[in-house]
Length: 327
Image (cartoon, rainbow, N blue to C red):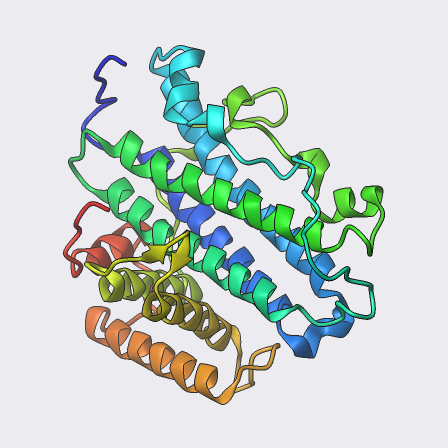
């Protein structure tokens, strides 16, 4: 593959896309965790976890698609774009799930998510959540001629990890729902292959002119979530993320799940508890993370209500605190 730099930094319109899609992805991951909680079993954990897993996978796909469009406009051929996107080994939700050896689940037996499925779910959420700040840190660097690969690689890996999680949800429910119901829950009709990106035929991709050079402005919720991501990145920097076999290190997983739970605390207004039940340990961790985040914000931004900074400025302030090593 010929060496290409595509400029010394991600262009402003893609930085806007990276920030917005990362924020949306965090929200989807938080809801996947939310609907896996036993207290919401009556609301159908399978349906909602499949919906939100698909949403997270597709949201990341939108960003990957935007970058693919940028590559095409820079004169890169389709085959080279496919190599950048590692399209030859992607894991799609449309892959028919293999039947899992062992117990056959019925609708009554699987009313609450099995523990082993919950473990897989938390590993997958951790895997993706840790890669979002890696992508963002590369995206906002003022000089990084290798930004394309450093942004694409963690995102395509995240799409595949979410694809495997979606297939697991479907495999567990093969004896519970018919094929058409599973397809609807997995939102298979909106699944797009990276082999066809940029996919301007399925949706109108934003161009540089559409995004413009003016980055989105921040609000209190967005700054808190971005600060939580930066804190997670800082806490896990230098750690071994995985312990083998795709399993996440327990301390890393606790940090990631705690961060997602802290997002739920941040979203709660006027001291209300989150919409889903946390264990005592999860609640203590989430409150500690949220409190630390608030204190850090006060030190970083004297008046967080001013609204005079773009999200890019906030990200740079936060990520400049981290070592910034390449993973």
